Image (cartoon, rainbow, N blue to C red; front, side, top):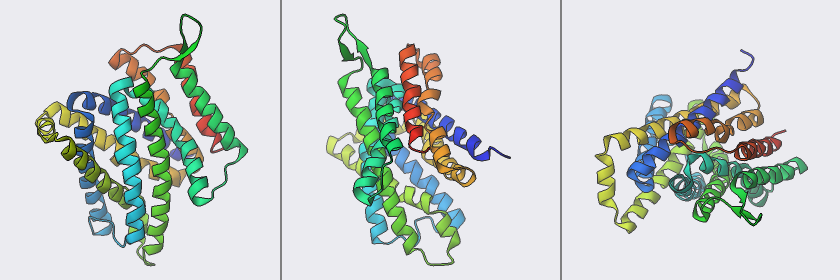
Length: 309
């Protein structure tokens, strides 16, 4: 089939759209912190079972100290900081705008890759940053009665959205460093283990995610809220669905997609989530959608695509 990779990439974008919607409902029902702890724990169980079936061990085989260090750091930045910001942004500005700020991840990843790995940023990449930021600005800014430009979203929500995009971008580069060390540590002939590196890496990141969120829970003394969340059947349903469609199916399909098509094409299609989420946000949450917001979202996606041309 000629467009297998592209179709799988679209399925990833749809899966992540579902994740955002489930997470918004689940977060409003049981709380951001509680949902993240449940999600990280379920992720570890699902990923551990997958690793056990494929490699024979329910944990990352052959991962050395450097691998664990960089991937735990990635989990701290991407999950504990990034996802905490993202899920809390859902409470303040909703999943639609929360996902729009995730288009910041590619520019942030490009800058972090340049700083940590010496990766070059092409003129198209620089242009992509400007276009992406312009699209976001178009979506979140409006004119007041004095015809002055103002942010129409709560500043707290905007800062949380920016934090989510930054966490995702930096965490991605740290993951790349960790997976590089992982591949070096795996002995020749361990093909099954080598093929499962992305899943094993996600497992290590989820370990830090679970530890980080549990520590926050303990500091805040919100244990009773977690117990309440675990007894909330509907809340647990949304948390489980957000885990299946996100870290589990989303990651699996994204890895599959790049085997069938160019990674840049796959990444651009996967970045369509902010566009795909507009209609369900309108239908499910009755959110008003302005034409300028839709145009701004498409411009942000266009900016993301420039990174991969």
